[in-house]
Length: 252
Length: 252
Image (cartoon, rainbow over all chains, first blue to last red):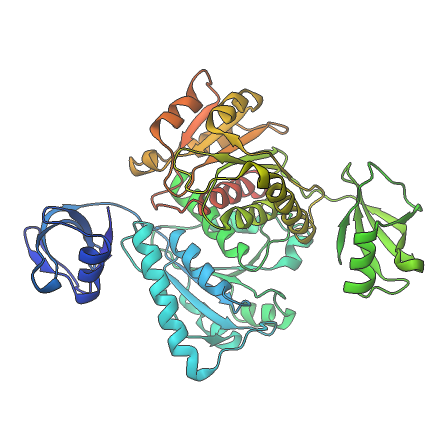
């Protein structure tokens, strides 16, 4: 059943709710929904309703919210993913996959070894496009929350944000090469419900050692972690971390 | 340092070894290696040597195997990944990522809901191309082993192979929707070194219930597993399983 995030804080069972123009178009023209067909409606406060199409006049879809469903789809330790700007369209791919895997926020970071540079003028458009990818992926993954795409920051600006998190895991290839094995487990095993997590991964060239130093400066909540014995590409490391977190927090 | 898999069963420290034409071209023309430059040489029996370029006459590279390094890069429970044929070029992507994440063998499966069909005549070329992608990914990931790409099989043929494995995990969305949470953990926690594992994931449309039945028929080593509360795309499910396995077996 199709899922739609709506721009409303909260709704109530038995409300009739008119979808906006874009969602109405998707329902009526793309999905060809007929009166009586159902879809999920998700509010900004993460309520989930089963809505039934009751009206489609003037190409606007109105749903009757027949039932509220209570489902736990989100990690209980929200994760912000800081990603060193990768090459080509890899960031789009990372946003899609990280959304499926449960990230709450994704922040692109202009790192020392990032080959890709963002033109200030085009950054707004890029963020907008990434936000749309996140929304579609959240709908497909049956999430109750659309991850927020943050503004591009520098490594220095990112380092200044580290104090906001209970735990920060930095995926650093050099410690993996030295056989570091247990830090990710230690962090995950020490988590409590509601803890705010950050994952930091580098671009194709990895981190400059100064960047690692900057991240650790003044912060005892920052952990440099290996992700197993194999070398993972820039876009694979965040997927590994999010999958491992889901395994550790949602299945274990 | 660049890594090359060579077509030789085993080598010995202090051997001088001439690379084949393709690797020589890569070393001398692409990487522009000079006398004294080093690269890893990996044999079919998973020996890893540091080789030093000593000769490049006639565009053929000869390396002196200066040192053998002992590194554990492979999962201690080999995994065969059976993948329902996905759309477009997603299989190439899955092969690349599954190689980074440690799969030993990847077998494409023509499933009921696979939209993509392989033309028999072109199957050989496709497998060859996937094998090349696996080799490149194995070099980049610093593995000691190139995963083997299997021939395309039907669901029925796959089901007949299940007896070869100690444990089989099938990622089935329907059990995830019902909140199945612990089976993957149970399987992973029961693993012992050397156990042969299989992971089975569906195409975009998922499994037909008959396929699930077929897989479980006569096999008590087949476990139907949920991968957490969110719905993962066809290409994301194998990544989740391999990452979780690495976390459980290599970090925990």
